[in-house]
Length: 300
Length: 255
Image (cartoon, rainbow over all chains, first blue to last red; front, side):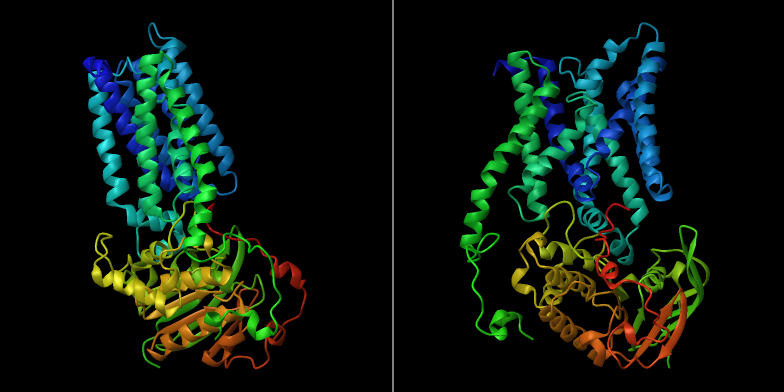
């Protein structure tokens, strides 16, 4: 494996594995809350952080973390208070964030949109030693939250109103979800890029759903798909000299299509094993009396 | 009557800037089964949602088990069935996974022990869904969804059950199962506050009916004898029934 002889590839592969784990791990809660595109919005906001990092000569990764966390908190606040025109406020946040990034990077000495490109679409060769440290720390936070608080996050994402009556701190958990999503965006930024990060949060979860019936299985399969595609994409981009972010996202979509194609025969076999017909019965038969129309087990 | 389990005094609430509750008084005593009735838009759902804190009251006092609602922390004593047509979210989940979240109020740091898993299984048995425990909620019928939501409320073994239209969209067979479940709970001394569109199979269980109209209590006493809201005092029949039945599916997930 000559690929492992290069320090930059070791760093890239480590970052890729961490992205493969963290993006679907937080993405599953976003999909569960039907906020699948929240990661995309945070990605746009993070661009301002990258731009500010260049302008102030601070680490773009940490600056992007700071700005996207602030952006995510702001989005959550808009969700609470600005019910009527929430979508408009979010749109302003997204595009303001993107415009801010482009503006700041062009204002910074020697900066141009070219610097931004590696953050937008990901770049393996530029993952530095300090980037890897940051990515490891941030990924540890994401894993701790998404696994350690899985029951609480599941309850809040499944039914917020009910979760309130179990005494869970609903607002705090919503904020934590938003912050964790923002942190994940910056973890994934170097590998898949800000514009593609949302795909890794959503598509592995959608692909896993084709096979699973439980939340726990969906979680596990989505993370497995995430790790497989980020590793596969990274290795491919090394050998074929193609951009890693795009390769990873296209592989994820391919995995989704493959699993969707496999899902239908699988569901049929499962239904047969369970002794129940899949979907609609083959043909309908009228019951002979109204009593027979109700299955025995369901009768009062 | 001993110390009331639920007590509302002069509660007002608004949705947007529209007043929905105009100063209602409501008391539910220990072991009582109280039905909250009224036409669509009369404020009955808002009343129970103000009790659990989902809708803020603009004035008035709300107490649960004698504690002002804002300071109430003993949520394991309350089981809540929100108005839903589905128990499903955006990701597949099994019946057990959904019902387990009802046990979180009794779990420390979200860790479920053996006794908690037992309680979840027992709650599923109560609603006759134990055989579907490992199935995805996506595969259930409307009545079964409602049974799962009720099992989730029962999982914490509550002293008080608050249910918002538990019979909406439920087939007759499931209605009978639910009525049976509720009869057992009431037999154990559980206090119940239910929002209902009509009394239906639950009628024999109900001790008292409180009827709301335009955000005010217009009746508080024995349940009306005739069936359906046509029999309610002051029912002036201004709303088309089709529109009432075709209320939009509210999952609460987008708001």
